[in-house]
Length: 343
Image (cartoon, helix red, strand yellow):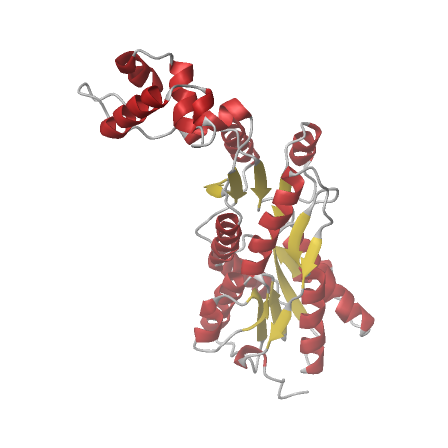
């Protein structure tokens, strides 16, 4: 509510109209019925409250948080909220926040360090009680700086050594893919690895490579191509693999959207899926099951990751130091990786 001049109604305005000090007005409006008698007579309390009600005064929760140095507001930083995986993780964060009596707001860093530092500074200026980062890098000195400043924080989706995180067991997910491809007769896999600084990429690739190696099959570095976690990145990486003259019998993309890009490139090169090339993605986004050739993928517990990361952040804000958690992935087999006719 605003006054006749368009200004928000403040405690000072109410104090001026009632002839009571602003600090007394603040105490009366913020105190419970049981405590209010400590600050003013019943007549004064009634006068202040009636005037506040008639003027449409609303308590400034943010200002109250500044005074008490406590906040039920939590900041979340992700690379891109338009990404389905990150949006689903944030839904889990928000659900847990509501259940526990907190509020959240989210911003994008685009995986650019300057953006992330600026967004973090903005959130700290707003006195957030804690931060959740979905854009951590494997080497991340900025997070170490925040820990030194005693800023409560938790990582989600991606991990960094030395910081509490909630992730999918990405390494195990990669091993599940290796076991499946080998069991279906594939021996020559190419990998669309994703971003080299993200643990999701590194751990999924490492799991696949280890799984093939234990079966006596090597995956050369030349068959591992890094790029963005999106369809355009998957298309470009697959084009690069085919242009090298190498013809894989399978492609593992560490993200479903990259796998979808790979499907487009294979189609354009007259290669059939799965007979010529099997394709496997990661995350099990809703689109995976609805493709013309339904996509085999690893289901990651995206919503649960978000929900649990918030619960651990609350523990951090209470001074505890919870252990990192890895949630269990599940291989979902569909038509894009049926057994090879040559197996």
